[in-house]
Image 1: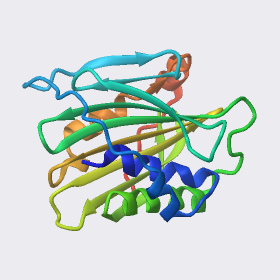
Image 2: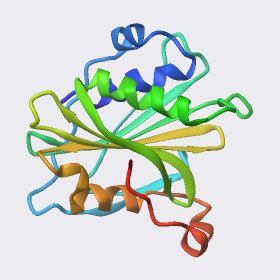
Image 3: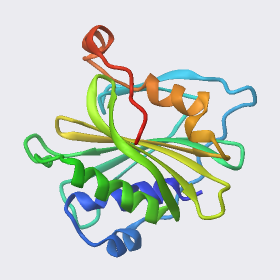
Length: 205
């Protein structure tokens, strides 16, 4: 499953090069460790990348500079469950003051459109969302054969942009496990703020 490749293709638009160039730069996805049977969910924290989330297993972690986008760095955290379900957090990190300053609706639409193209999926819903107490964007997509269902959330925070992406069998994106993954995401150092003033994620439109 080309989850990592599709995510990279989407985020390379931050510069932005063409979608085709982004896809050509994408590396083949590494095989992530499968979660044990019974969905052993556990809280995972990455203080270095500033986030925490619940994964159904121990994530495989990789980091690479984004080709042609120096000094942009990409950090990936991914868990695969069986042959057709994957949970992934991609962190795109800029030096202080270098992150994109204008994150409007058109910007988010370009990102989710590129994700859909990179994963050979069709967008079904998309729209603003609040995740971890921050304004972001959410999309639901289906692959061309209707066998895989994707839930994608984009969360900007300071010099980082987070993409939470999970894909699985039909109806996965609106199922309990996908929502649990999304809703467990939080920014470290902001737990008190998100717990006291956070807003429940609104469904993508």
